[in-house]
Length: 605
Image 1 (cartoon, helix red, strand yellow):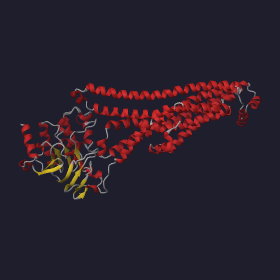
Image 2 (cartoon, one colour):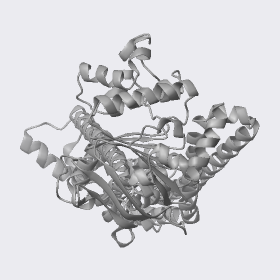
Image 3 (cartoon, helix red, strand yellow):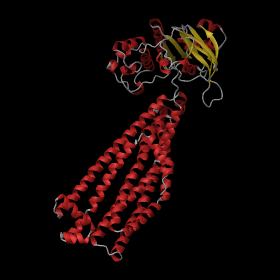
Image 4 (tube, one colour):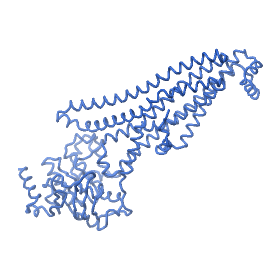
């Protein structure tokens, strides 16, 4: 049997990567060694027991009949114990009990180590994903990541631990072979040949297990990607009338999973079925030759058969373990690839200085940005100045680069060209965490996790007092509807707060941003999902925020009615600054803003 897992010290490298310390390995092997020794002795002691019964306890006859009794009598004499059948049986039981105790501790320790590694791998994956840059987040599918964290990590760790189990099983095999050789070296050689043959027979199926394991990983990932997407959008599926198509696709994916799982099980069964006849034939051949050719004593033949019967399941387990190691290569490889890509995508933590305040302006200086795998820049040589404690609106048609631009301020995205300066100093010189600490952000679609109203607002500032929470809710215009909820601030919202209206979710998320009292507030399409009445309410809320707080507000929108009072309006079109000014000035020009304003006025009428 060729185990690729051990090739070129691959397993040792993976042991290090999976935080399986050499101390853990040493303890497991030591406990296994003790377990093996006690098991071998607990079985081996049956030979002197059978001899004691056959010779009716005659010590002199036992000593002359067996070399084992020569040493045994010396031990009994030294311990001042009179040999008897009861004493021998008590020793046998004590050895078996010791074996079970050490086996219990080995299994318990192995499980504890395995679960610790699974926890650490899951934690590490999540941590690295949170620390990865936005380009990685853009490229990865959540379903595949969830599958890796929840399913493949466990399979991968099992694959890394499997060679350790194999070492343990080889220790037991070696111990049994030593005992067999003491009974009959001729038959021991014969048994070894049988075991080698048993390992050669399923060689092809073992190789196939690796391919099947990889196919099963791919099927699991496809299933997870499908589920994450569809379970989040049942309304879209129903309104699109695609229920039958989605059901058919899901059934196809489950069929693939079933086929790969069944095929993996078939390979395992083939191995089991092939090894079993070898075990039976070996036992029968041994029984014949031991009696007719070697003329072994009955108790030796009986004990030899007992050991062989215990060895065959062990050999079968070893072969199955090798097969399992190959089957687990798929999860291990996908996990290693995921860690490698996450490490390469780690977000830059910025410079060494701490940005503690924002006093003058943010300058976007000749900035361009190009998405990965895109041939054209999303932003082209942009220069914009955002003054402190002023409201600046960024408007323009869809696809003009508005959201891309605001992603540059907190360094969610890094400019391809140009620079961003805060109070005249390059943003790259500051620590990333300190930059983001000065910015509150409200996305276009509020992201509300399962929890209470209070918990969502606290997501903006975990140590906020009740007074700060209520103040933020008041400023956001959310206090009134929150107080009408069944349990007010302690009302559970459920995932995405689907029981709230679009305007209520928007104002609640605004309260989450305001509780931080950050100097810069960025609003990305804040009214895109609101009706006219809710939009007017939001506009009043925004005026109140600007009046009652020292906040630099940046609004990204294509709805012009909420930015008429902005201190500055910047028009982006096709990734470039088309115009800059206030509302009255821009509507007098014949650019995109004037046309959009007239069009939106007509649609309102």
